[in-house]
Image (cartoon, rainbow, N blue to C red):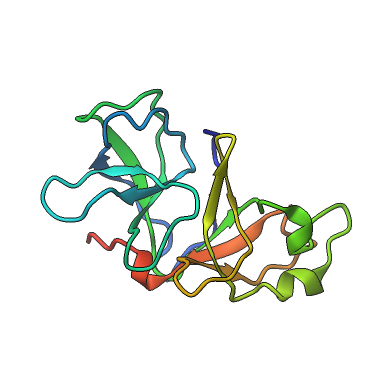
Length: 168
């Protein structure tokens, strides 16, 4: 997986918080800093894993946060540091298809703005996380406004409440 696929854009009301430690699921392979981390299962014996493509799904996938540490391979007892999600925070990620978002060599604000508010998901292709553009009622990410001339080719997004694990 690529390093720093996701970055903090604007912190929430309480700013950037420190990391929390979670048990990583065994056999998930390498995990890099900057990747979305979610719970495999809530309840007893829960553990975290990197999110899959076409996630998160509302009331199904619970995003813990963004990985702060890198592991080359996982075991069932390994611990990973994660920046927990902060309510109201916005993150940056590359689009799956830059032109769909109006992000290219000549950025088009109107194209990007037309997608603001869209409910979308992550895409994981060739070990890199990007963001899809298809709106769906149960998709767990929301495209947020950003000035495309200052976006550096990135899409701003937030995580819907029904996909956030709040463990504090």
